[in-house]
Image (tube, rainbow, N blue to C red; front, side, top):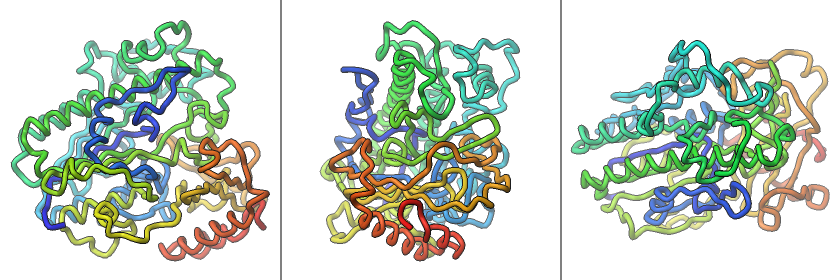
Length: 490
């Protein structure tokens, strides 16, 4: 790039790609609305086929801060002190870096994701953040059996018991911290990273946001549903869960709009690039699942990463001095979270230290790249071996392969713990039928028809590309070996 720009990266946790453009159906003829982000999309490069790489919350952000595919050597844990991270690289290029976040898992308990930033602010109170100890008596809004974790819900309700007006909700507080920081720092060259935890559960937006989607509902508010098969919810309850989620997404969109208007007011859209994305989505009844894994007491099982989870939104609104509104286009190439890191580094005209595994998206935007990726990989950590229903998703332009390694019975004998998806240690354990699956995304975008038997050669080819990819990014031999024998393929 010939010009440098300020860079604002906005991440919204658990924000499904289909929330944009009124594609997410709450119930019949009712769709989620995100008008501010839809407006941003009209001025942005919209990457229609963006995917996360490492899964979930903490590993995805490790990818973002390093530009690497960390799922081959890292799991949910504190950020290692010897990793070179994005704000350190940007500092050498003359940028002031600021982190404003309400996502608790990257900051609490010594997780150190603030490392390298010149400043950081943690907006307290989300989920199981140990923020308040009162009020002592908290009434949960539904049967405890329907909740993923009763203690987490109680903690969240305590944390937010003093809310009275919309400005007291966490997305509003996070956005206003970003606005105030911009007012004080807009004249310098900066990288601002704003990390919203919403629309992650618990879903508790102001009531009018939910009423806009499901005004007639009378029943329990299952604001943090138990992860797993969703058959414990009635149809009305499931539709209301989708309304709660949509309401939370609209709340986040409202306050992202406040940040956008401040950028306009300050007159810095001329030299400020804005990027919006997410770490993953969530199942809300699709594939008969709710959540993004299976949690039963002290046990944790993984589920396939279908499109609802691994396909994410990605908008890049270039600064006006880099093209801005004139660059609005839709790009159908396959992209990944580490590509955002590489793109930011190119926008900043910084040196990447030779560590990046992602690819800058600038050549794609400029139409200079004739060859791009033929597939992408989305995966939970591979370091524990093929346990607990481990599967990776390999996505090409046409196909989605849910690849499952064979598991030797002796591997089930040892207890292996994971901290996903909320930092609480649980034993990895497989649940249900686990097998390799293949879907034709062009003919079957909702992935309802497994066509592996008729297309084994397609699956073998994608598996071969995946193994080659693992070797190219330096995965250990034992990790590569575990994918050389897969269910229904060998």
